[in-house]
Amino acid sequence: MTDYRQKVVQYLDEARCSELTLVSELQAQIAMAPRGSYRTLLEKHLRETRGHASRLGERLDELDHGKNPLEFVGGVAQKVVGQMLAVGKTPLNLIRGSGGEEKVLKNCKDACATEALEIATYIAIERLAELADDDATAKLAAAIRADEERMLERLQRELPKLTEAVARADVHGDPSYDLATTGAADAVRETVQGAKKSARSAAADTKRASRQARKVPGVARAEGEIKGAMASEDDLPITGYDALTADEIASKLPELSQIDLSKVDAYERREDDRTTITSKIDSLRGDEPWPGYDEQTATEIAAVIREADSDDVDKVRAYERSHKDRSSVMKATERKLAAA
Image 1 (tube, rainbow, N blue to C red):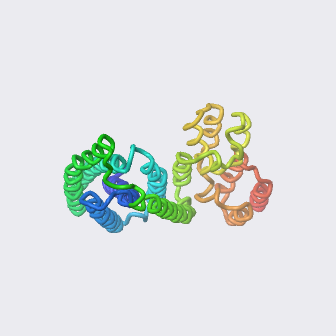
Image 2 (image 1 turned 60 degrees about the vertical axis):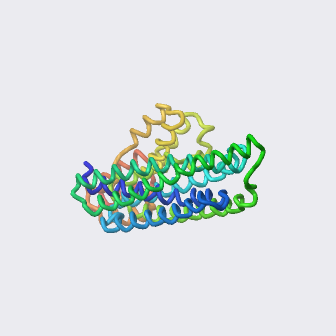
Image 3 (image 1 turned 90 degrees about the vertical axis):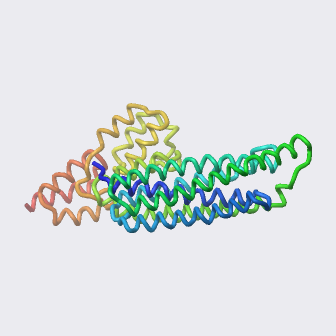
């Protein structure tokens, strides 16, 4: 069961990932906005957002976030998802709307919606922290919420002026500026490249942490489910997955690790949800003989078997029969049992 600290950490980490994603979006919006009060407000918002992300990170460090491997993997995965969402959304900001004025107005409306969501997020964090007797987190959430409320009010004051600019440009044929003069396209490209780089870096962190985290029971399955939720066909461990029949896929499942089984399961349930496949995966679910087993080679497993007790050897034999059924591993178990 989740305790208060775990839930507080979860909410703080989600908020931090949202703030980091918003940084990329704001950079693109600033590039598109002409000089004036709205652009100045966005620049202020960008500085505040970076500050919020930093303060949330500091609080997470104080709560020892990351010592639990599952928390670490989940948190970094959220960051990857957020960055990739920013990559996908940013170019769309350039093509929607009839002209520069309308694009900026739509961005402002989006910014208002984002602020409302953030306010709701920090209200929830503040209340949860109060229930957990976590005064430091409650005060942090209240302070950031106050910043967001002030920003929402200022954004709303910009809406009438931005709407008047759209009317002058689209109704009266009197545009106030040319989008090309803001350098928006170049800046958006830089923003996308930066977000991709950040996502790649976060993904590398996930990969390194995952190797260690998989030694904790339950983490391998959780990691596979996270990956499967975001996976495309090319990311799956079975080549040409979408072109194969359910029976063909089911025949390949015993070769997969628990991580890859979870990955395929999440992808299959998201797409076709064929019971032939999901039922087979359910039958192959099970604890590894020891945490991290699926990450080891047959040679490494054989070395462990030489020092293992009979219970572990029996677990290896049962697991291998249901999964990869590697002859070298099975022979190692036979030698161990014969020696015993």
